[in-house]
Length: 183
Image (cartoon, rainbow, N blue to C red; front, side, top):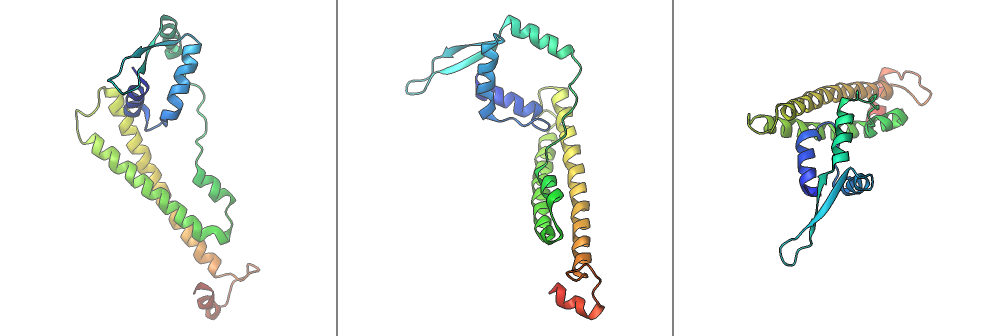
C-alpha cells in the first residue's frame, strides 16, 4: 500500500477522532521501516510518472502490531482546543471577538455534522461495522460540541450585556447612561 492509499484507509476509519495528515504518513512509514516493522518496494509507474514506494508490514511488524493490540489503551491526552485557550486568556474587551471565534467554530461543527450525516445516510458506505460505529461516534461528538458552543455563545452574549452596563471601574451605570455605552 502506498502513502495515499494508507491515508484513504485511515481517513475512512479514524479521522473522526484522530487527525490524519499526509505530511505525517511518509515520515511515519520511514520510521517504521528503520525499526524493521515495514518494508517497501518500488512500483513502476506509467511513463513520465515517478515510481511509488509500496509498503507492506514485515513479520516483526505483524508481531509488534499483535502485541500492541493486546495492550490496554494509553491514558487519554486532554484535547487541545485552540478556541478554549483563546477564551481562557480573553478579557471582557475581547468578548465581541470571542463571539466571532465561537461562531466560526460552530460553522465548522455544522459542516462536520452535515458531512457525517451524509456519510451515514448510506447503509453500505463503510467497509466494517467498527468504521460505521466510529463515524456515528464522530457525529454524536460533533452534535454535542455544537450544542455546547451554542450554550457558550449565549453565555458570552449575556456577559457582554452585563459588561455594557458597567462603567470603567466596574460600577453599575444608571439606566439613562446605559444607552450611551451600548451604542
